[in-house]
Structures are given as structure tokens and as C-alpha cells.
Length: 116
Length: 107
Image (cartoon, rainbow over all chains, first blue to last red):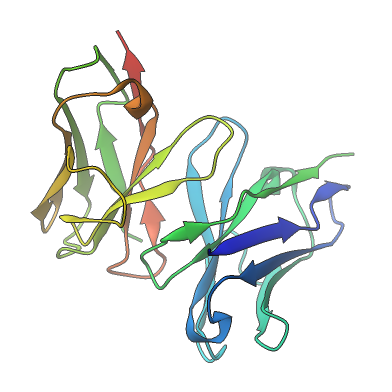
């Protein structure tokens, strides 16, 4: 069974940093592209970042470019999102999702709250 | 960036009725469009990919159609568990983008 479990969310002050993790199991992690997608409270879905299976291709939404860094460790079956210079508008549930455009599996999400 | 516009924002129907949800793209996405269902407190679930292909385990009452800029998600006969928010998403161009969602509510 495919499982994606996010962790690392929490309360952080504006300008602060946070690192999210996504632990994958039930499939060959190194064979799949991965994504981060977020959802602000009461709002819709926003794609944040993509990383290919070998980390050779990476994309970011303009809203996070230069502040967020996606990475993965295929030996540890883990996906990461390093978030720096956090803003109020980064407050959201962050989901990791498997796939290259077609997001077939999602984790349950981790809440990031940016507030002073 | 490709903008996806979903309509209506809210759709009020009764169980057993047919639901038709629309997604329009600001430029052609070919057939690279997916639909997701999201219930409160849950992660989104993939329903349809590449415009008309049902994902694994999705009931046959869900169908997708369209190409280019205009797409439709149809639920042929609503079940109580179908009342949720539905999002379309394009993978034709980066950044991949989502529509703003259609809330399907019980009338």
C-alpha cells in the first residue's frame, strides 16, 4: 500500500524557516517524481514544487521561488521542502503528492502556520 | 501561467441527479487535464486523468470529457458520498495549475 506521511509543520514567525519531510513507503520511491502542493485555510489547491526521480529536474511556483528548496533522499525514501523567509501567506496545509503531473497519491498533509 | 476557471462555483443538487462541472483553460492544455475530489479534512483524490481516463478504483458514474480549453466532469447519478469540492488541474505547462474549485452541495 502506498503511503506518504508528512511531518515538520508547526508555528513559525514571519521571516523564519521550517523544513518539511515526507516519508514514502509501499512503492519504489526512487522511480517516481514528487511534488509539494499547499492549501491555505478555506482556500483551493496551489502547486508549490516538483522534483524528478533523480533530482535532475526541479520546478517551483513563482510565489515560492528563491525562498523554498525541494530535495529528496532516495536512500531514505524521503522528500523534503526547506522553507525560508516565511510569510503570512505561506500559512497552509502542505501535501506531498506522487507523480509527474498526474498526482495519484497524496499524504494527509502537515499544517504550517506563519504568525507573530 | 495557464489559468483554469471552474464553473459553477457552487452546484446544489439532490442524490440521484446528474452533475456537470466545467473547467476552462486560458490556453490549450491538449488533453493534459485531471480532476480531483476533496472532502473536508481529507487530502484530494485523483478521479480522472488526461481528460477522460478514470483513476484506479473510481466508479463508472464519474466521467470526463473535453480537449484543448474546455473540459467537463460528469457524475451520472449522485451518491451521498459524492458531495465534495472538485478541482481541475493541468499538466501541459509548468507551473502546473489548479482551478479554484467547484463545491457540490446537497440541495
